[in-house]
Image 1 (cartoon, one colour):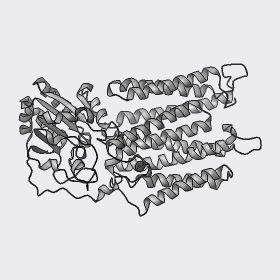
Image 2 (image 1 turned 60 degrees about the horizontal axis):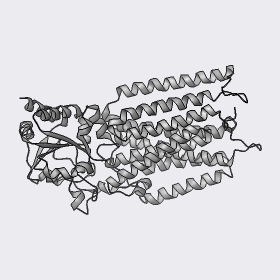
Image 3 (image 1 turned 180 degrees about the vertical axis):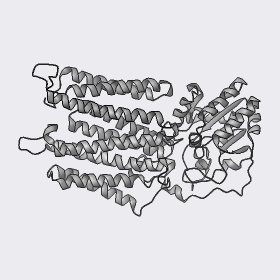
Image 4 (image 1 turned 90 degrees about the vertical axis):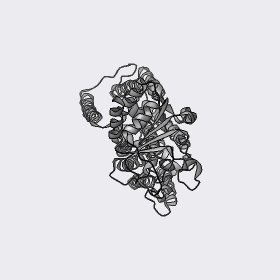
Length: 484
């Protein structure tokens, strides 16, 4: 069939899938509706895939339904086999993956989306007749060349950038920024070269042009991510999500697939908006995220000053103070995720509530290693949604708080962000935990610092009690003390 002409039912199906994707994004905006949002997204994707498969067989003029030939059925069987294989891999991965490994899993998925865009673009270039993008002269349509070039470029950037993000998140590569000399000039020059090659591709469809676009795009994805430190990975994951959406949208134009265009645009724009929100929460420039290497100056920060006096407490001390408190605010961070302490933390909160203590959870926009990381972990542990608050909603309550219970967080409670203009985190909104009557801080040792690489004055405050241990083990001991 003509790839540019679809029957009315197919257009309506694609429109329906687009509406479902919008409802999915709306549902995912709140933990309380996230499950429903996921279901909307799955139904929308199933509808889009089924419609795409159904419209690949020839549709006679004036008819609404395809009339597949035996050859079409063979192709359909191959496609379904590939989908089945992917489904098995996806289900196996989803069942085996730990919640603490979710950030690197998301980065890996982004890399696959980028690679798929590159492969589709190369397939369209090598076999343009199958994609319906040939002119009568035998040349590829210039408009399709632009779409193809941009799709390959964005996809390659997404792939190589996501691979580096995965390596940093998974510990295969140091999370510290790797700074190249004149990196911004190199990045800008490479991006300009890619844009010039895409423009040249509209006049010259030689293989070397496509190869150069692909190679330079893989390179710039690598160069954009390696200067970014581990502390800034939530914004990086969000931005790569946006890139994967734009790559899919560009390939949608090449494939003449309305659903891909709609889905890609939704993912790309929502990812960009989320990145902007997170940059605002970190007092970062949105443009500096796109340029790469923001926050890299954090690597030169100093080490923890262990010679300063600090107070150490035990699980029994913590349990006594917690049960004597009227209200407790719990601030989780990546350390909680690493220790997988979310379930026992919820158990501790339940015990305190039974004793009449008000318990709330405070979530920073960039806590963890991906957007919403802490929300996902707390939801997995069945923490009630009405007990979880964002920074701006709970910030004013710390002055009346009896205990600020910090578990595995660091930079998001560091007052240097408000007072030290030389600090790499200066200007980033942080929780006002220093206003609480008592601060309990769980971390493995006094020798480490946060991902931003700066010491935290909260460690040494008079009202702070340091609970040095594995987060899960310490909370388990507190729970035992509360029970007895």
